[in-house]
Length: 416
Image 1 (cartoon, rainbow, N blue to C red):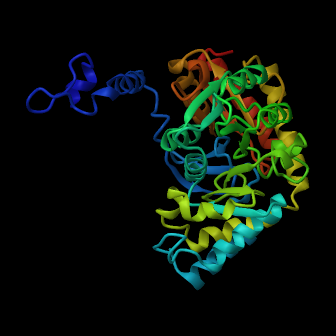
Image 2 (cartoon, one colour):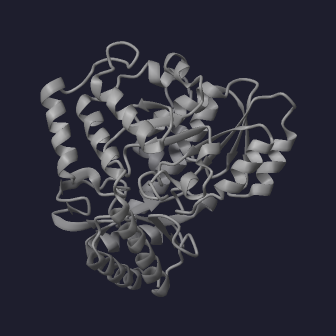
């Protein structure tokens, strides 16, 4: 197998000359080998030896500021959240060992779904074991063979996988392009089922969608609308309900998808909706029916966190201040950013290429700062990005430290 890495033009084969099923990954294997051969630390194998707070961990034996965790509201160390998880662990044990439709619905699962209904002021909520499964399950179930899904080309992998699993006709359009979206909708045959899938915040660049205009266009063409608010729930909007709330079109959206692994600070996914037939999804959605439900301690932490996020206006205001400060500081230092203005808690710094991006990532780590290195093919236009995700628990002093770390690392890596 070593030979396949060093000589990708001579793929490893099994007996009889049949190509190995791993041969398709040879270019990626070679890219990784080339990156590591340059002497940089593997940016995709970092181990956090100890997590001290939502914003600091021990990595490689040294204290490191965390700027790549999506822990937007800093709920992972909230005392009430932790206490709720410990109590549920004592009262209900470590896991359910079953599906929600069999033995896997505990009181805590109902409680967290009610918390989501209260948070969004909607009638129905359905909790999945991960955010990925929420998109996979909802999209593949409501849009099937003969239906059409119109989606932004920069949609998350879980959205694309949900489309593939449901076997609907998939019609992508140029990122955040309202006119392109409407052109696609016009071409769909009369009478066909239509679902428009959008995201509030796009996680690679940190930019937001023009949801109000897009939702209006989708409604005009008779489409149902699903908005993934994974990166805006808890933070954006007067009540933290996301970009749809902030742009005053939440009531026109049919399905909101979200996750517990970002602002909520634990793990899991969900869908909320006002559709009167929504509850049938519990019997027909395969990633919900055929997956073990979340452990009681997880839903207890999620429920407590969601209810606290209802009263987190001060945290939201501080996070916006952090975003504005970091965006301005990095822009003034000469870095090329993914957005002209701060639009979310994500600030992406565009790198010239993967090799220099990895060198910059490593230089930041040596400074004591962790960010995400995002690379092709996951990124738009094959860009290499250093993706920063701010936290409401980052102090103003930490944000200034971060700006200084970027300046020093950028100079050493030859980026600025």
